[in-house]
Image (cartoon, rainbow, N blue to C red; front, side, top):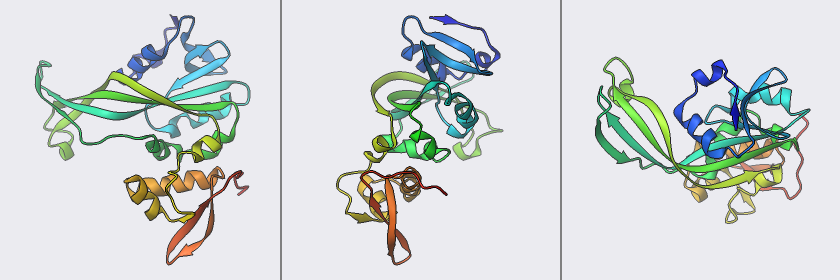
Length: 235
């Protein structure tokens, strides 16, 4: 592998850098200019972007690259996270496991930025299920919600598995089989044991990509139904 120096690497977060190193194969090149953008990893004809969060920030790049290139976007989801608190010298004060456990469905929280783009055959998403460590340092002037503990960085501990989404059909397959034929986002949230907000984000993405359709209402709640071979709406 070879790396081209670029200002982007100076701002690179540890988790992003860790994932890039883990993902690389012999012959890959890093931080390569392509059509006016800097791409994380180039593997032959495939462009690979490591996106740890905020899919909205990469929408412009994808819009420019997809007409002429195959792009794989790699997104980590933490199935286990350790919270480590350190003092000013870096000495560990405490370490505990976070109760939060991510699932593949967390992808939808980011995908709301551009769900229709997944219909492009040049784009694929690869979810990496990871164990991470979040380092926090005390700063009384910041992070009042965490009582002064500021997130300094996230670090990769281990990649435990992966899931590739290559099409809108693959995305629809993330709906649980146990859902009734017609369902609301409350049904979806209950089945997945997730928040109602995430269920609503799933419904939005799947509706935009043709994975579900609106069939009516149950009181004030919208009723959805799976579609076997849906197509994205035109408006």
